[in-house]
Length: 139
Image (cartoon, rainbow, N blue to C red; front, side, top):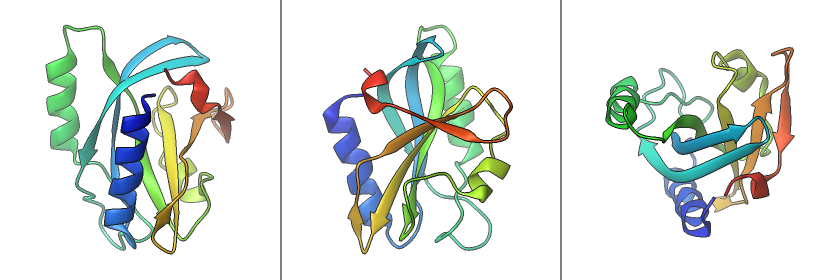
């Protein structure tokens, strides 16, 4: 993943603080351990309830992006969101929301308004927990 994209996502998380920010990761999956993120697309957080502990990507934005990418090599390969005043590890709520096992979860912890480096996860084969993947696997 390009450094500029990581910095931009961290800045978005800081701007959204104390609420969660979110968006989509666009790129290619070469195999189950190599994900190539070419760009990210922010989304308003349209979650019902408390935006400090919930996020939901606007489905209209996701559908438009998927339509735009349909004939090209890039796809939606994951999403990102922030965890205000929480760790960069997936929460039990994240696990409950993991309906698409092939998607990467990129989480940006934000402590007192300061974003930490993102951490990336995928569901393990059982689908009952996440496993962390190295960010250098994102190129």
